[in-house]
Amino acid sequence: MAARASAAASLFDEGVSNHQLFAVHQVAERVEALGQFVMKTRRTLKGHGNKVLCMDWCKDKRRIVSSSQDGKVIVWDSFTTNKEHAVTMPCTWVMACAYAPSGCAIACGGLDNKCSVYPLTFEKNENMAAKKKSVAMHTNYLSACSFTNSDMQILTASGDGTCALWDVESGQLLQSFHGHGADVLCLDLAPSETGNTFVSGGCDKKAMVWDMRSGQCVQSFETHDSDINSVRYYPSGDAFASGSDDATCRLYDLRADREVAIYSKESIIFGASSVDFSLSGRLLFAGYNDYTINVWDVLKGSRVSILFGHENRVSTLRVSPDGTAFCSGSWDHTLRIWA
Figure 1 (cartoon, helix red, strand yellow):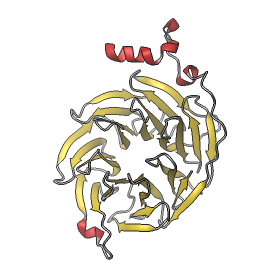
Figure 2: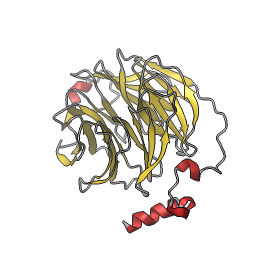
Figure 3: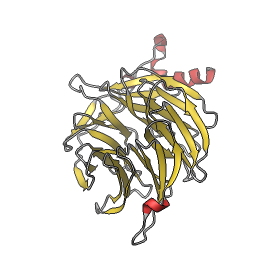
Figure 4: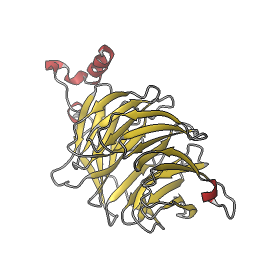
């Protein structure tokens, strides 16, 4: 606790007088405001027959995997908008998909309560379904999945209230994470290569930080007023953001062990479904159920842009690995690349 307290003190040294901890926007008062910037839809990816529910970038900064309510999982070339692979899952509502770090496999799942891994090849008439490997089994729907820093392990979150770490090769359960009081809706791995922690959020309004080795919850935050739909680590790994049905996004500092910013406006009354940071961490992109994407200045706490284009709720949003663009998926059946 002493180490955590000293970290908190150094982080908020501006607010140490009067034993008062300030919010980020107070500490950042002297930081220069962001200028005007223009982001537009540069590509539209069409091909899903129903709501797009999840997407993930490949490490090659070019390919994207997306999953939808119609049971389809599609791998796209985001430059040309071509579809490179497509697989039809045995269930509808494929709520989770992820690209393997090597770019040679994808994982997906949803109402089948499973997480399946498909290797990707470039054979002319590949039969992806034949090479499918069922890795994870939950007792309720799969809400999120993510490979760890290798293709060999996968982390899943489920409506059964648990998260779990699995060995891809054997399908063996390596660690399970119990602590949420309701459906777990989202997870994100700590960014550092050695990072052994991840954060999860769910219907119990809690965001929990877990140690992957011990299976223990090491920090828990409960300041949202409704379900947490999305969590994402700050690029440095020292903080994370969350997006919730309460129409706010929030920033939590792990060293200070507290909420340090709320991103909200009176005029925003719809829930935030998905959040992600720009590469520098200065911007927070958030997709909302009112079909918009709001761009927040993380330090100032103010909205710097609002992006229109989708014709139904924005369900998923990810910044590309090199930070030059981001992709959003929507219930309007399309994905859009913004830059």
